[in-house]
Length: 607
Ligand code: F1P
Image (cartoon, rainbow, N blue to C red; front, side):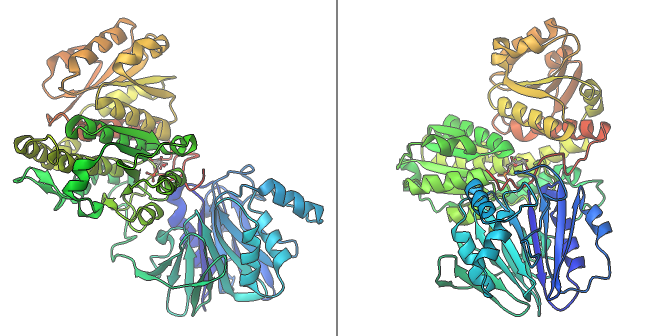
């Protein structure tokens, strides 16, 4: 979602800003812009579409050594040049880039219009430069700070003033910002990815903080006044080193990284001999776990699907009542928080606004919430304070793949650990540990020989509708498969528990409708078979994901894709692989953008 980059130093700012925007492209956006600053004024450039359009429009000769830049993902107002950021005050001396949403925009805009301000865009963000101008009497920091006291909603903002051409002001509430400390130069970014090429010494702004950033100095304050201490951190040496290597795009690379990612997630955590697991980041004692009364797992999109699988495992194996919750719904329904319960916030990016707000709501009500997060140091990880890092490594493609399998793995590890404090016997614990430890090589084996994916693509690519069916643990897998196909190939599709098909979606089936059935050999396979018969009776085409050697499944399938045998609980980590590949190959066949599908964002930082 929207990205921010800022630079101040003693070399030309625009190449650094443009490069930073390119690094943030993976997050999703629809327009971009920048301003370069010196005391004669601001040079503004904005373009709709890819950052390359902006690169083409910015002259290479610009010498200004300070500037801010933005990739916009439209919320208020369409995708137009005038809605792209930065936005300026009327005198053209103050520029602002903004991530987030201003809730009281209507009141602020009306007030400013009544005072004679003429707006040039339809965005909520444009109120900021005008408000700052009203508060400005020569002190840039004081003006931004005062303006922000009038704003309700969320923001990560970077502001520059033509009067102060070696200064950037950054402030954060609900939308992440990081400041990079270079040698005689400083950076601002909404994601460390944009600045890691230049420096690894960073300061993550906390919510409610404002920073004054010059080439040599950074100071942070609370927006409401007092000075706050500067916490300089060092990013990992391999942070931001992602390259596509021999792969044509990040998605395929990330699909193939799954064996390694799952291995990393389990390293030192699954104890095969003892038949248990350890997750010290959770800071839970065996006594804490034995007393847990309920568990809620909260996430969005793919992370919600991982939450569903986590909840099934926790309840089924560890025998603790567990529920998966969609984060955006959860916090709005004034949930009752069980003080004897435990909450997990599941998020790849650790920045998903709805999930972060759910965390805060749970904390306000006295609940204990732990993160299951990929992005180290992200807002959800920091807000939770404790949790599990899934360690899948940076995920660049918007459609999540390796983060999903790592999230599920982490939740299974937790299940094993929790189960052993309850009814799970040492023998059953050892079996589960062995099943988990076997996963990476099974995944590797499948990916080396994925079966007739292209045959499935030929049934799906021109379909007007597709249905995904699964039972038990294969139902969330079906949901994940349908989500991937929607995200990447834009094919209308839905996922249903196989037993629920006859309660509605069966009406959608006609001759040739592709139906993807996830039916590994497990305790509910027989029941899924009857749904397959119903599908076939309507002339629909069955793409069957089945356990290798299941001749009955093969005989019913129009396209049969075999996955290797594995433990029942861990089957989602295998059956999801062909679905990732089907979505990927279908999108390729249709000429879709793979790593940055339309309208989507990697990090959804708005409500
Ligand atoms: C949640 C999510 C992703 C999806 C897309 C949009 O993100 O729905 O699952 O692939 O990128 O956001 P997160 O909370 O897991 O970062």
